[in-house]
Image 1 (cartoon, rainbow, N blue to C red):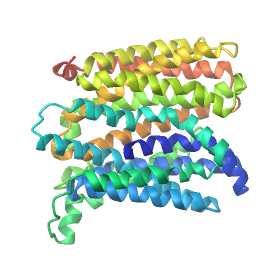
Image 2: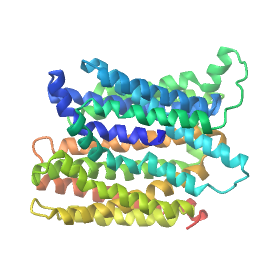
Image 3: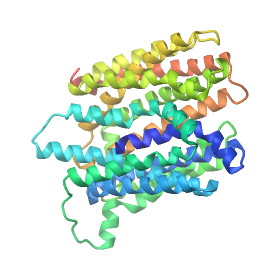
Image 4: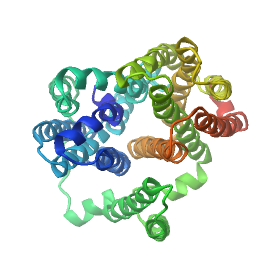
Length: 439
């Protein structure tokens, strides 16, 4: 439940931006900060939460994260201005970021206690569905909630889920080991506070640049490059680095998993948001109806992922997912405003195959490729790469549809999707490290 909160909150707000703008008396464009605030907070907090889970205990971090989401939901639900709503989204972004990496550490710890050497596929599959596949149900849920209860429900919807998750965690998840008493300087060194700060600065500057496109702001990009160089230099010398640069350089299989996951989600998010915009503009569908068109995609993706996760399959599903992504991207090239909605639903099911196969297979690859003692940070960094994909997709659709949402614009998006899908297929087919895993 906690792991599902981040992707659902990422997309839940989409149908509430216009009502929020009207309620706050601001232009619709200003509400985009509510989207970017969660992206920024999450991209920084995901690996940070993983590192803290490794050092302080995953249950503690998990509980703190859930509590922050609860507070963010209350603050946003009662907020009277854009500043308060933005603070609420930051709290939700930080809090939801603890769910996935802490859960991965909890699962690894539980598997070691139970003497399980192979990845616990069914458990990882459930986590994958909760953490990624559920993003597809965000728009229809958001459209329904806001239509019935108003825009504040986009924040208040977190309350019942977080209360249940909080009580369940306190009741059922074993307590962490007692914390050792350490000098503050030693604890800061083990957590690598300097590395976290440098990473946060680099990500903030880079995301400001990406979100500024197509009207590029070059100063944030230059700052991101400088801070990135300093970050790499620091992490190479740190005794307990926040991001182990040597590991990324030596464990190229893990690095490719990050890249493959980011590119796949770039394509998926482009469909999720780009096709949704096109459905509303070309077919005249309401936001709720457009969200419902994509709802079967999430359901089918969940169904596809279960047998794959149960058998810990990696290479075969990744090839199938990349192949279906190529086919689906080609099909979008043929869409016109006269294309029946039922045909569009059929094509989205091809994307569902991609989502269902690649999310669980990449997660299993991550579980086996990352060192056990660094799994939390590795899992959080995997989610950060996913956010790069989602932000890149928003940049693509923003540039292509900046003047109008048309069939020709959708075809440009489809051509970009096709290029990305071919790269994903090549990365998968040529990755020899995947051959050592189950087919």
